[in-house]
Length: 424
Figure 1: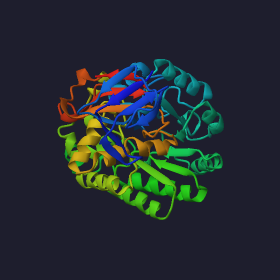
Figure 2 (figure 1 turned 90 degrees about the horizontal axis):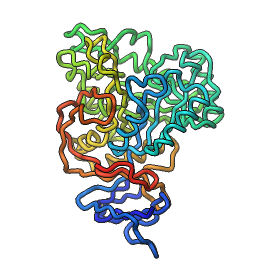
Figure 3 (figure 1 turned 60 degrees about the vertical axis):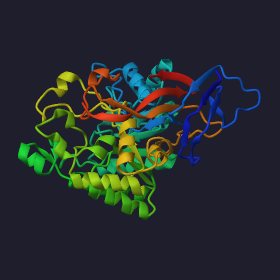
Figure 4 (figure 1 turned 120 degrees about the vertical axis):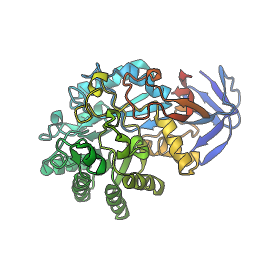
């Protein structure tokens, strides 16, 4: 289908574009920007007057809960939520049930996602068998099945020899290893940041050193092996400092932060709000400021939603017993825009953190609107305000710390491979 998107403000971070330009799409690709190519006849015209036309968002951490946890969410509900949030590609961690440690499971998941014909799904394979941290998976076979990287998700890998072997294996084949830094012994049974709020509320705490000790080990092993290392969901000022130093030394390390940690801190727990029980925990205001500074100076490469839909019953429990996680797919765009506004950052600079840079971490030729690129596009109204109401979210997970917040930026159209998959 030939589509013309006209009168919109086109923002493309890769090509330094921020101008009123038309986009022309044919056979699922961007065929021209500005003027129509010779003989182009549009089957559909989208009038984007007053709207921003940008590459579709790319989310590095979205738990879709299939297979195994369909009572929390289904692939269908979460893919609908993704496109409603302008997300055209997403990576899903391997902590499903069973974990993504077999090629057959990965192929099944990719096949299910393809049949839904919505966002592109990129599975992250398990680093160790059943995520038990003991035996390595057949990474080469999993990569052939469609895995883009390898991870332990939130499962501990306490044996550093196994981690070293995993990194050596991955480095041999140029695979990426994605790890969330947390020392499982220091974090054991903890649910909140080791600060004044946890002390006041009597909550079991997770100290910052649980992150930094694990991170220092990961960085040392990455330097030893030369593996492509991606650090998932950094949460502390000390962690950001370690990443900054590693990058200055030339280490091939990238890093992301959850949108929750860009906007929230331990103070938001208030009187035991279980919606603020997250992994990693919300840390201090100083940590939040350091995360924001790290995003601005490029130490932190990308913002992700850390989407983790949770069963309502598992959330309506006392804080320490409630299941950790929050829905986020539909909130990623407005929260990135909110951050940009607060930091007086250009729209192009902010969107790069959720489009171009996540694509580079995934090793994809995506997140831009160059001629010949796949027409994965998000058209949104940057001025439209809306209130976060759980009942109105398309995700099966309704739990979010942002309930009741008025946010700015509403998706009007989402296109994947040149097809309109969402219209709002």
